[in-house]
Image 1: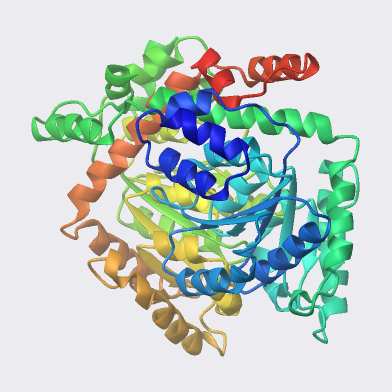
Image 2: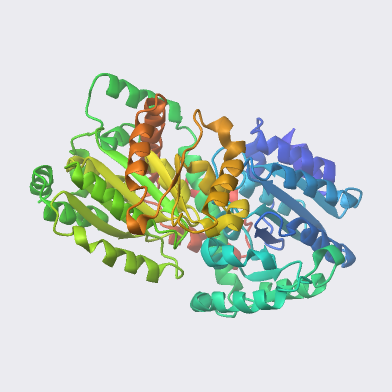
Length: 301
Length: 301
């Protein structure tokens, strides 16, 4: 079965790609063999798009997809919905909005529910992006709400990370968004037709000043009105320029290294069931035994 | 050497505790043996305090320490400073403010710089809390800025997690703070003498409504003015009440399980140097070889 899937996705069969992603997502028999046989492809670029809910990420991604389609490039959009009760509604709405692309054979769109642990992206996100690469897409756009750990993960997966904010979010930027600030390769101020947009951009620039040291170049800030298509082409030009800056190969090496590291960690931990640890602890507690966590760790290491 | 440290910390020698923490932090020879010999202690309670910068966490912790000192209880405050360029100033200021306790033998205060990866708490935070437990402290207060992953980690470490916010943060709560909302066992609205405090509390209560399902009890919201000592005693009573709710033992079991799981992960990954992975990838790239990440993973698994 997996041999066939592997052949089909390489011919550009979108339905086969969808099936293969589910195949890996559900860890069906043979999924590891399939992953082990994927042709490596370092041509595909991953663009991460994150930011607070309501910033207009989906409309923006929609615009970016339009730019890529115009250039006759193949693009896959992976939307990771963090499983938070706060975001459900918005995310479902987003998906419906993007339905105009469903009939375009150069565009593949997939929603991935982040299962399991709070924060983070999808547990198989690395494997899924590798599948899309094998299907010869030119770009993968990885879209997620910047909540908890997901904003850190997206930077670790993307060649270029775009952080989308809106003029209202001034206060947040001063407090909670240190995480978002640090990962941005490009800032987008969306809905920039609002009256306070210019002040906001000025403040954002000031706010970004302390991080200059960790960036060779100043982090670009682009104003967009995604709902009217304004600024999308400029954003695309900036993203392309980011990809070609001379630090990219070192950055790319570390990106790949971190991905392999996470895959190894997943592999080394996969046989460990938390319930067994819990049972051991409960048993020690009930017997009034020493609860030295380090000793318990050594039983399972 | 470590035998002596182990004996000394159990007698309540604060300087020995400080030395032992550094001993473990720096992985000096014998640190693993020492950790393996710690007497287990499930009497010590860990209280996590987190929230955005400027919410007054330190002043509040200061007040909580005062309450505990009054009751003649021993308390250790561990302040984890995420290594973000945005927080440095505030954190240093906080430390100075707490200096009134440095001469009290029932109070131990330690700042821990979060080294290594972005987000998360200190890489040895579990081991350090176990050391403090062995030194027979009644309470550990774990204080950190709620940025990136640290807010998730603190909930995983604490028996009771206190999230501190201020009335101004209304907008943030609607957007970025899903992570903070989900981890709170108790909400503190500090600086609640501000005019908009009551409206804020009302909105917070509405905002918290969707998470009721995951909590047996409604999440309590306490108003404080930490700088004047208002509400601190009430907060303390609520924290004590949280500790004794009937779900605590199941929660505690999972807390301990997660800690052991992280220790195992650390142990299983400790011999893996990312630079070796990076060298392997670079070598494959330069030879134009297949960059199948899954294959590379299997070389190191």
